[in-house]
Length: 443
Ligand SMILES: [Zn+2]
Image (cartoon, rainbow, N blue to C red):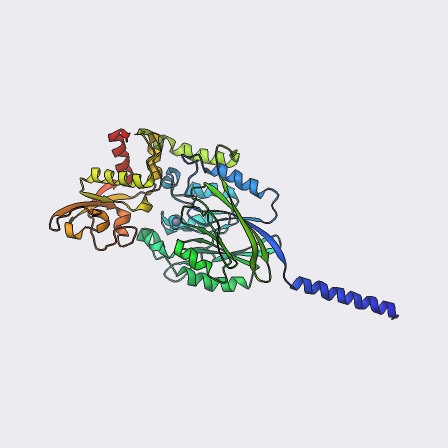
């Protein structure tokens, strides 16, 4: 070997070593997460013209155009919230949602409203992986096939881990859950995330969780990115702490989120991020024809039942005002002295103008039943009497929904236990429709 050849060989070796070393050290790659949460089966636009599955699909496709690092995630509660969902137990909604092109999703509490068997069917009929790490049966078996999935995008291995709020049991009828329950979400995620972290470049938690849990997850070292749902108000700005970021958009398909990250593959964490939300304005976005077609098929099925005029409202009633109206309807139905519905049970406003039966379905999509019982004044929950003068020895009739009766001990409901409600006055939805029909005009 001549000297020059020897040098060339050394150079080649050096180049190879440098190249290999570069491959082993950190890379910064981009990842874009498009995300939705709490779509709640609102297939058609809301009364404010926002949302609608066909318009949301169109916006998603627009955001994805030419995007090489985009994934689309959904943070739960796709089911429940419209007549199509109630009447067909969520099935058409999950079928139509297959057209969105989700890459992964998790379940929300309302995805269990039609029973755990139906929730499992939703997982099976979805063309994308649905992951949840802490919903288990009596034997500790997960409801979903897996707690996480690893997506490959733009040279990154992105680990998507799912989680459900610890409140699940308070947010569902016991029968709907069967022997399913949640294991503590933060501890469970911590355990899985540590394992998942070793197998991917970035862990992303897609979670259906309450605000306290959102804060707790932001402090978890192995969970740098969180796509959240459950709280229906969107965030003004992304929540962040250290290098961690959490995002959540408005419910009912009013917004689409877009989180752009640059990811350090050595630190397995974002080095920078920006977040924006797109308002889904059905007056400005052209609907995706395939989704619009499917929505029409299913809306046509229910239209004859729900698009009947039942009265007029002279103004828009907020959810809090609708709560009062629902309680009046319950009292009218049962001749009760008091009525109570939890605020979370009121699912929509009442718009100004002609009131259709559909509006009542949107307010009360649950098949909740009005139940009632008679109690001594001293036994009435404070949240029901709300400061009114009560004779402790007198009998009073109290009407509530069967959901409230079943979950009466929670903060959201009666904050007491042991009250029996033997009376049954039929569907709460019918009680509200009857009241509006009788009054003809809501002032
Ligand atoms: Zn929820």
